[in-house]
Image (cartoon, rainbow, N blue to C red; front, side):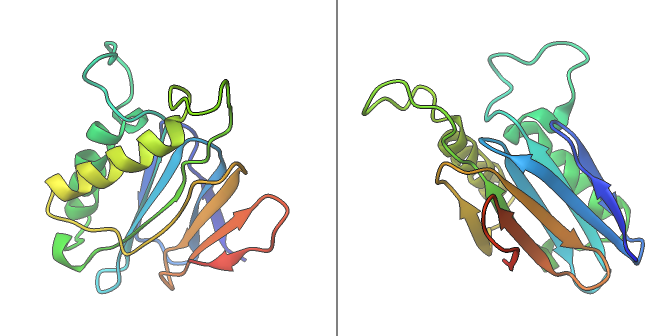
Length: 163
């Protein structure tokens, strides 16, 4: 039986504990960012809510909330646990468009903007995403098994699949 650690909105978790599964439940427009070092067996997950902290970051607000602050922070935490930045396998899920006001408007397409911001923050760190499961208009749950490095995603109304 595995120990599931739920990574809620704006939260980040890093683990090397065998038998642990990191899970970002209820991803709508949020992005679940999962990183795994298969050699050190260190896993990290962030549940990113918004793309950019520079316009709205308030004092005492968690760095995990924003793509531009979550990416460098989770990397720092993983490296401090023995992960090698150059060996990381990185995947993202989420970024759905949950609300629509008017046709052709991207104002509420926070999911799309979140996905772009996470990719940009990773690129800034010299990293690339291996696989994505983003977009659409349905929520999903994203998981990463610390022991096996298995990434999986379950879209509402569908079976859980490996990502």
